[in-house]
Length: 398
Image (cartoon, rainbow, N blue to C red; front, side, top):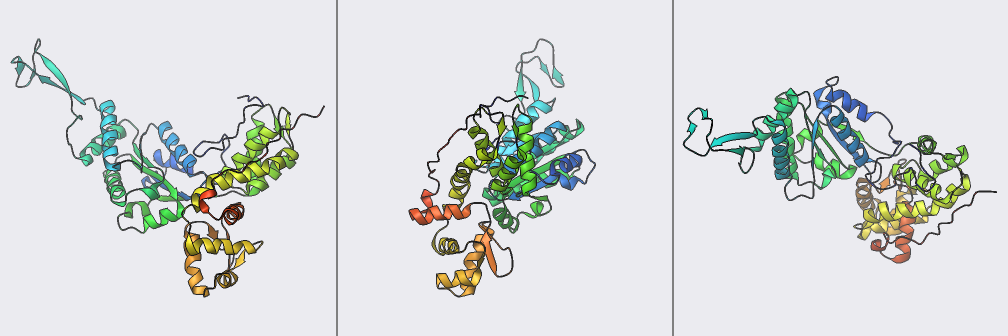
């Protein structure tokens, strides 16, 4: 498909599917094989975990697309709904109205109706058997999954931001899906969430089913893969990008999927009407790409980081690279053991990582820049306020 210079092929918005996916491995292909029966039925249940902006929602969407291609029907549940269980009930009833040939039953409304049917000429009405009746949810799902399986498909339930789900509601939904699988129906469950939240979720006693799901850890890719994603994305357009520009864009992205799309879109914009995206366009795009990461990823992540946890992060700004945990503790005036309690929580929240024993580093690209903004403004609430970044556009050389 051709793209004009005014229309970027990059998709920097959250949840949007890029033309070229920055995924290592083949979780979608493996899931499709499980749906087709070429892998264990247990691999039809997938739990995606990862940091913000690494493509969890995109991968979840890809799994749903694979299910649709295989003839499966998907119910998408929302953790923000009043009741995921009731949402599942409503969706199941709606699908049954489509799949069940007996969804409507005939009821005689006059004396012409016989004991064993409805005679010709009788006054009749068609009654929706799934409207208003409090049929147990398990029976609804069993009937639906049975019909879909008999037709060569199955039922897939999908939940994004699963770490925000009500534990009891999630347990009930998962239990129903486990029952369907145990009955031999075509059934699957796919969910995605922030890694730290997913780990806490799996520690809950009511999530045994999720612990057996196939775990996919989504994360950054290497810089070479990032550069190739950018090159291939541009290659599908009338434009081209130099090898040096693609590599530099990959370096700026640090392999972070959201940043790959952002730096690509910004460089595309700065190239103006030029047929080739050059290194100078990528360099001109860096500031805006970093600002997008600070505002859209780090701003929400830092909003609730307060007290000693925030002090810990700010204390690390004194180091150019990874910080020695003993040095950070000293700056905070704490014993190493006491400081490590804050460090451990920040690691669980995926703000910090441990590159080697005794050291700690920022886990995501440009978190340092976000924290410098916090230090300047004195508030994590102002991180999400976008900086004013000049957007010069290059004119083609004559």
